[in-house]
Amino acid sequence: MKRWQLTLVLLAAFLAGAASGAAGIGLVVQARFRAAVAGGSVFPRQLIMSRLTSRLDLDSATQARIAPILDEASAEVGRLRQENAPRLAAIIDRAVARMQEELSPAQAETLAEMVARLRPRLAPGQTRGP
Image 1 (tube, rainbow, N blue to C red):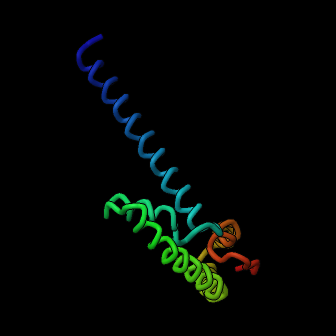
Image 2: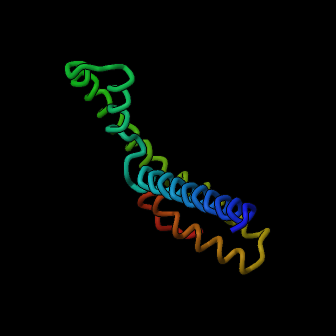
C-alpha cells in the first residue's frame, strides 16, 4: 500500500470515529434532555445535590440540612410547571398555527406530526392539537 493510500485510510478511520463519537454524544444529550423534560424532573434534585456535595465538599450533616431545601424547591418547580402547562401549550399552538400558514401542506402536516410527538414532553397533561 502506498503512503498516500495509508494516509487516506487513516484519515477515513479518524473521521468515522469522530462522526460516531459526535453522534453518540448527541444521543446521550438528547436522551438526558428528554428525560428531564418528559414528566420527569425539571429540577433534578439528585444531580444538584451531587454537584453541591462535590464542588462544595459538603459533609453528611450539611447535606442533611440542604436536602429539605432542595425538596421544597423541587416541589415548587413541579407546581409551577403544572400551573403554566396550559399557557405553554397555548404559546406552542399559536406559534405552530402561524408557522403552518407559511408552509406547504406537506410541510404543515409534518410539523403537526412533530408537535404531536413532542407535546407530551412539553406540556404534561395537555392533549390539545396544534
